[in-house]
Each structure stands twice: as structure tokens, then as C-alpha cells.
Amino acid sequence: MSEVYKKFLIPPPKIAPSILSADFRKLGEEVKKVEKAGADMLHFDIMDGHFVPNISFGPMVVKALRSEVSIPFLVHLMVEDPEKFLEQTIDAGADIVLFHVEASPHSWRILESIKKRGVKAGIALNPATPLSTVKYMLHELDMILLMTVSPGFGGQKFIPRMLGKISDLRKLLTMKKLMLDVAIDGGVTFENIEEIIEAGANVIIAGTGIFGQADIEEATMKLKKIANEKYARIISSQV
Ligand code: DX5
Ligand code: ZN
Image (cartoon, rainbow, N blue to C red; front, side, top):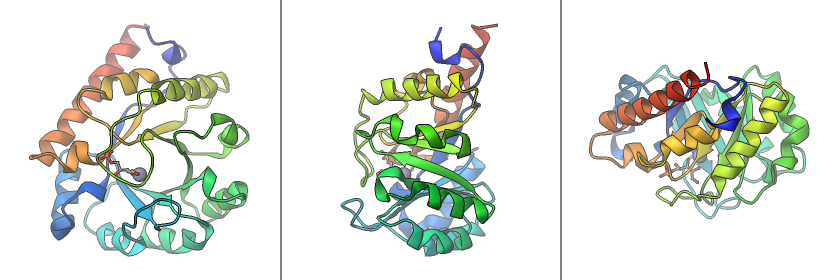
């Protein structure tokens, strides 16, 4: 039995396809497909070419897709000075805004600005960033995202050592009686999703694992099924 599940404080799994790996010629169609297949939310990576060595898209794309589907939008700001982009991102239709703790010395201020606008707020940590950087913010957050690859590109390999970080975080949250969403981002496959759930993550962001597959609906359903079954097995083994 997984140690981190002891107090049933882990919310059920949610699958969040990351559009970074989608076919941008037909984004509208692709996001409709994953919603129909049961995706719980949609993940957007806004990259500025400074915080990460890549440029993706801006809030305009979030806005363009808002009318296409109704699942919540999880917007990951992979940018320096995230404060500059908050208004546009929220106006574009983000339901949850995630910014990086490494991106600004003013995480607390950013968090307050997001919450003031009535949307949910989360914080993201790069692989080498210790959990202690967010320890005093935990009660204020709706989600914590752990990068499980170096940020900036889709299609990279999951860093196995991040499994320990996920379970350390879940233990910390359980100790504080906080039932928070723990998202992981990068390198999810059909093969490793079970151990990711076992470690205590529950929001599973997948780019290549969904949009890089021949049948994106089938891939969404398959990841969701594996995650739900694993979660149910762990919970029932504790009753
Ligand atoms: C990586 C991005 C991810 C990316 C994940 O820097 O933050 O959201 O889309 O892609 P995969 O699932 O292909 O690793
Ligand atoms: Zn992301």
C-alpha cells in the first residue's frame, strides 16, 4: 500500500491534455476530440523564449479555443515576470493560472493578484527546485505543478527521480491535511502513469502521450482508464 494514500487525502485523477503537441492546423477539432473522450481539463503552455528556451503561443490561443470546449483551462505561464501576463491570460478565459516560483521574487503578490480576479491559482516548480520554496504558500494554493522534465519542450523523457518528489509533496500536504491537486507535467506515458498515481499525483498533464498518438481520443480514454483503475485499487486496498 502506498504510504502517501493513508489518509484518503488525494483527489481523484484528472487528465489534462497539453495542446503543445497538438496539430496546430486543426486545434479546434483536436480539443473537441479530447473533451469528447473525457479529458477533465485542457493544458496550455505559454512560453516566452526567456524563462524557457522556446516560444510557443500567447493568451490569444487560449481565447480562441475558449468557445470550442467547456472543460476548465489550466494555463501554465512559463515566462519571466508573470505579472505582465496575468490580466491577458485571465481575460482570455483561464480557469486556473499556474506560474513558476523561479520566475519572480514576488510569488505571494502574484498569487494574490490571480485570486483577486476570482480564478484559481497554482504554482509550478522546475525539477531541481526544492519543495521548501512553496512550503509557506501551501494553504493559499489550488494546485501545485511539478515539472517532471526540464521545462520548454514536449516529447522529453520523464525524470524518474521526480517520483520521490511527488510522494514527498503528497506526504507534506497530507500532514497539513490539505487535499490539493498535485499536477505533474512532462513525459507521461501509458507505461509510467500508474507509478505517477501511486506516488500521489492526481492531475496528469500529457502532450505527446495524447496529441502525439495516432488516435487522440483513444489515448485520452486509455490514460484516464489506467489512472482511474489504479486510484480505485489503491483506495480499496485501504478500506
Ligand atoms: C513542457 C510543457 C508540457 C508539455 C508536456 O515544458 O510544460 O506541458 O506539453 O509534453 P509531453 O507530455 O510531451 O512531455
Ligand atoms: Zn506545461
